[in-house]
Figure 1 (cartoon, rainbow, N blue to C red):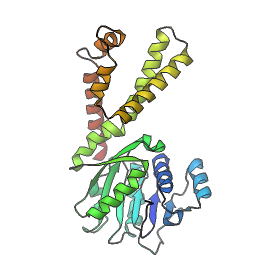
Figure 2: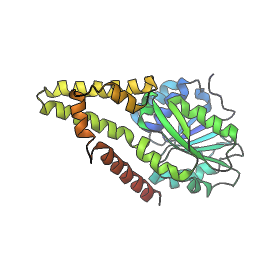
Figure 3: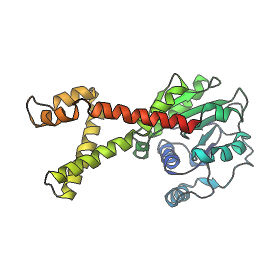
Figure 4: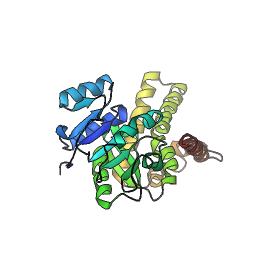
Length: 274
């Protein structure tokens, strides 16, 4: 069913994540006539998409007369306090304020709004650029079930959506799924380098590592089986995979290292939110 909004959707910021969301919304049937992009200097790729799609793009939308259905705040966190206050003046009783700015709390938006205004904080990740992202959301107390459903429909255009019970879980979400793609890319880098060190030509090692990580991810996505079961299925007792896993699963091993990495990201997320 095509996405439908009663009023306009304002996208503040057409960078990589904002642009990915925009393309996903359009692919899922949201009319270009319902979208207004506020960005004084959109990246060339985004600017070209806006032109081809017929989407209105303005340096400022402060003069907009109609209350928007959604304000999607997708600018960098460090400029949000400059960008959002003029947008807050456009918020109507039914407007959804939806932020994807890392580290910006619900309270940082609520201080510009009335207690009755809906605010939703979301953390998507970069696979949203290919429609395979996962977005975690948390809403303030003023958010209705209908507004949650609308936000879910919008964000589902670039992948799956989960809702958190508490805002303080967002730091762990940032560390696991927000930063997580970088960890997976590092695995691909390390696997390629290990293949080169084992005697493979560098280009072949990269090709094998890239295809292996991508294929394993797709298998994990499609199978529905737990990752541990998939690992066990490919591990023959006394075989080559078992020999490698004996190293990776030693104490301390990959599990402990990953826990330390995620904990470091959680700490940094909390520091940035102060």
